[in-house]
Amino acid sequence: MTTTTITARSRGREAARPRGRAAWFVLPATALLLVFFFYPIATIVWRSFTEPDAGFGNYTALLHDGLSVKVLVRTLVTALIVASVTMVIAYPYAYAMTRVKPRTRGVLTVIVLLPFWTSLMARNFAWYMLEQRGGPIDRFLGMIGFDGVVLLGTVAGVTVAMVQVMLPFMVLPLYSAMEQIDRRLLDAAGSLGAPRWRAFARVYIPLSVPGMLSGFSLVFIMTLGFYITPALLGSPQNSLISQVIGERVSKLLDFGGAGALGTVLLGVTLLVLFIVSRFGGPAKALGGAVTHE
Image (cartoon, rainbow, N blue to C red; front, top):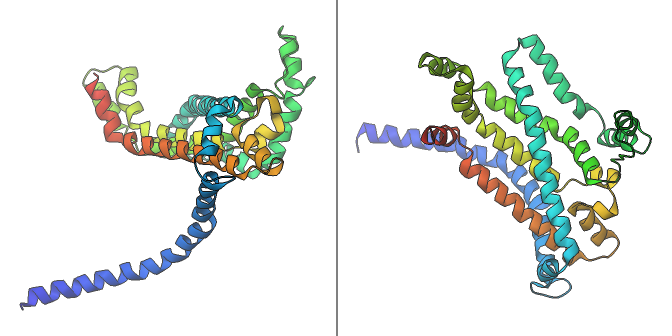
């Protein structure tokens, strides 16, 4: 056996030791996830197939129950609207954060993080006061000719409040992705004769697609399971799926049906994550823009 072979094996053993030690540090987090995350989810899925009877009865009931399907569609549409509106609002804000001076960027960052320092219940009750009949929004709309527009208890009122709550979760991923974009690429496009707007549309926006997808998927998934805002600002007639699950568990004791609804939400979440993982790469986004040039 040569000296080179012995040295290579010793280096391999030395490299394996830190990896083996690092595995022990992962064990507590893995155990925590298994006990408090995967086990409850597995229990919910199991009960959706076994209560009150074994089989697909709960899922068949969902398909034949017009109310559950209607609520599920309403929840998906609401989550889609919230994610889309937050993206439209957050994109120019995140872009401005990459263009201003460090001190101004710090102020903009504080503005984004400020909602995290305020209780979610306090923010929802603030929206309750704003959207109720005779509130500031109702009086303002009445001044410009729209009398009797009350957002409280409507899907629109819930959507407006959730856009404000979810906005930081869109700004931060967008800013993280935009901060890594090399602006010299825009200068290169300009040197090749592309106008600034065209260089921005063909180079900058495709490179920011990973941040857009990350923020969109995060807001969309969180909105699907949001409970507090729809419960406080919505109504039973316009309830979302989280409220229906809560009603089935707390009042009807229908754990199987509630588990089926939760499993459907889990499936939608996994589908969104799969789409993001497939199409979230900057190279794919930029390549697609070049292909369609």
